[in-house]
Image (cartoon, rainbow, N blue to C red; front, side, top):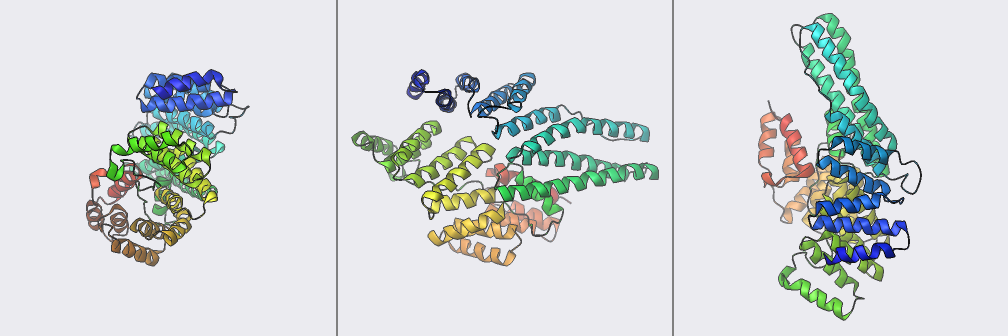
Length: 464
């Protein structure tokens, strides 16, 4: 509450709209920490009203608020306004593509998708209706693709999923004994074209993500789709969700426990020029459920310019932990912060590991390998070898992968860990073996995010 009061007081004192927008965004994050939805919404609205580099981001957050209220009409209006930001400092924001993607999602949600069923006349009529529903949704997603970035890639996945779904349904119905040769001749080429375009577009999107190092929440599904299509040099693998590394005191205070935060505050009361103390304070604030305030502490450390790489690393960790490990903006911003940390300290083991970890989690295995290799030269821990094993399996290097997994085993990692059991299931020679390997994953009920998505997709493939 004190932080929010300070922010309210500083808004009129800010030298320009850009600084005012930053204050509103920080205030929104702190209000979110306090579970004050209305205050959060009002801060995002105030930020959106200003013509700054944050306008698109803040507008997208306003649109998301209306989505949570199921007010699709108002959400559409806001998202369309964001997409139509053509001038000003926010005109190149990645949130334009995000807003367009959200608009397309609303259209997709409104699709009726009646099932294809005989008699033939009815089937053709429904198929035509389905195609007519698909076209405006596809067109809306295509606009997001044109805007590029993570949500351009995500839009490719959604178009592909819809196209493959329709194509698969067509192929299934054509196997029905009621399907005449004339119907097969008319619809089979359409289904084949839909599938081919989906695979070609997925391949292009994945290569773009590799080239531009873009983290998109659609990448695990896209890589899965390319493995299913038999694209050379691609194996099914999935990096783990948790495990990014912090520098400094543990967020729970370690051996000091609850006393740790009081000791750090005392240290800062004596001198505010201790960069590591500010880092520790940020860690402890995060550990008490205040990620917004922890970011302020890391910024204070950054201002001192003596532990820059460490502060940037931790700022990135809190960013993704607060906003969600799968959150596209947090992931890409964190990636940029970790890379920035490495420009200040090229051998920072935490930043090296975290970059590799995130590339693995988003299945950009080719990009993960060199960072894991550099991290392995600094720290000899099981998580580094396990991550490298996942990445090497993902790019089609099974022999190298096996060696890394053995190193990870020798350092105490469980033989039933997700990464190993998932790959064992993916390479299984029978459906029953695949299912058994997946069921053998330790702490199966704790899977979340891309781990859970990957598990469920592979589990479905393992069914007879």
